[in-house]
Image (cartoon, rainbow, N blue to C red; front, side):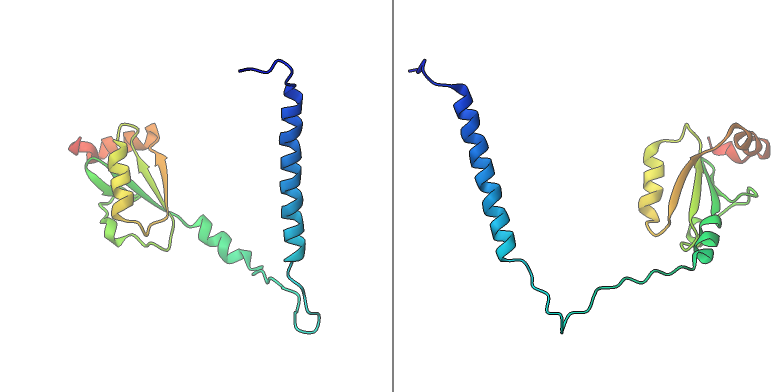
Length: 139
C-alpha cells in the first residue's frame, strides 16, 4: 500500500546521509592506517632520468619501409624481402594497399610479434611504381 504522506526528499536526504557517513568512515580508516615515515631510516625517493635524447631521436628517425602486396614483401627499392630478415630493433612501416584485407595485416602482426609496426597506406605514386615494375602480378 502506498503511503500518501511519504516525502520523496526524505529518501534523497537519507541516501546522501549514508553516502556522507561512508566517506567519513573511509577517511578515518585512511588516517588511522596512514604509513608513518621514520626520519632517521627513510630517505626521500628520487628518480633519475636519462637526458640523452640524441640516441632516442636517431632511433625514432630510423625506420625501415616494408611494402606488403599480394605478390609478397618488398623494401623501399622494390627488391624482394624476406620478413624473417627484418631487424626487430628498428621500427617498421608496413605499407599496404587499401584493398588488402585486414585479416592479412593482422596475420602478419601475429606472425612477427617482435616487430614495432606502423601501418601505412600505399600512396597512388607508390602503387603506380609497383605496377610499372610488375610486382603486383600476384593480384
